Length: 270
Image 1 (cartoon, rainbow, N blue to C red):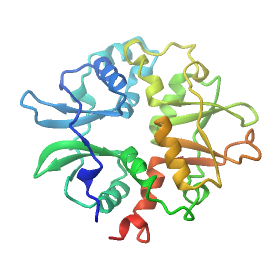
Image 2: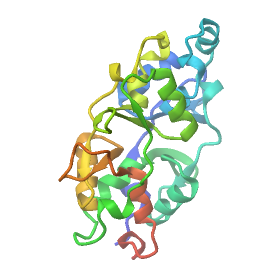
Image 3: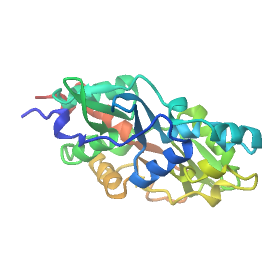
Image 4: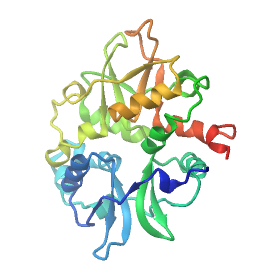
C-alpha cells in the first residue's frame, strides 16, 4: 500500500505572532526543540515561517552595539520567509521526497484541501526510511557529501556563524590543528545568544557540543537509526580504523531523502 504524507507528518503546527521578538522566537524554538515556527495573524492565517537559520542570518551576532540594538527591534515578521512551501496530506511520500530535493527545503507545511493540518520534515523521512532501506543497498560512503565546513576551536563564534550563513550549512565542525574532531556547533547552540549578543571573546570551543560520527562503510539504515536515536540531522563520516584522522565527509537527513527520490529507490516503487 502506498504511504501518503499524512501517514508520516506531525499533526498540528507550532506558531508565533508576527510581533514576536527574535528573543521570543529563540525561546520557543528551544522550548519545543524544533527548527522553525509558523508565523500567523490574529485569525490564524499563516503568513510565513521563521527558522533557527533565519535568526543566524541576523546581525545579532555582531559585537557592534548599534547593530545589536537594531536587531532587538526586529520581529518575526521582519525575518520570516514567505510564501510557505506546502504539500497536500494525500500525496504519496515518494512525490513529497522528490519535492524536498527539487526545492531544497527542510520542511513542508502539510495541508488538507488548503487547510494547515501538520508539518513534515526531513527528520520524519529519516525515521521512516530506517525500516525501509534494503539491508544490502547503499552505504554511507555512497551518498555522503565530501564537502565539510570546518573551523578551529579558537574561531570566534561570530565568524563561524557568518560562515554557516554564507555557505547555507546549519552546523560547522570543530577540529584541532591535525584535523581531529573536537565537536560541532549548530544553530541550536547559538540560540541562547539571540537576546544578549555574542561577546568578542566567545569562541566556538565554548559553545560546541560533541560530534556524532559514523563509519564510511556503515549502511544507510545504520545512519538513519543513529540520527533518530540522537535527534541529529547530520553525522560526521570517519574511517573507524583511523578515527582520529581528518573526517571523510558528512551525511545529512537531506542526503538520505535524496536517495529516496532516486528513480530506482524502493520509495519510488508502488
